[in-house]
Image (cartoon, rainbow, N blue to C red; front, side, top):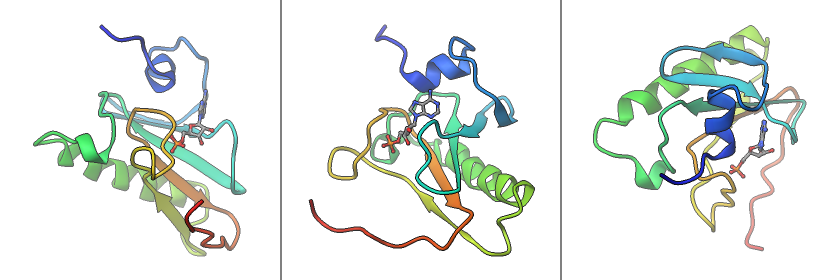
Length: 117
Ligand code: AMP
């Protein structure tokens, strides 16, 4: 079996992390290096590498990720003003951790700033 990635270590309590939300399928916690005043990661407990590598049936978990994002945004009082939701996919998408995660970004008006490097 391949070595655990950082989110599997968080899931298995090998890296102590404060959860904003947790159930059997999904966990949510603050990003360790925030790029916005509110920066939360919504992560499935099952290891799905990325959106590009979703298996048939994983759309149920991905759908739950959006529901959790909605609820965490409400809990953190950023629903009304709005926020961004971001999946990075693979190298060109800038994905660093090979375990699916949805970035919830808010707490300020955010620029687009997406351009080729
Ligand atoms: P990505 O570039 O989309 O793969 O994003 C990975 C994110 O995981 C980055 O924003 C990191 O800051 C974040 N991250 C890495 N390690 C941890 C950790 N131990 N706890 C919380 N967030 C983390």
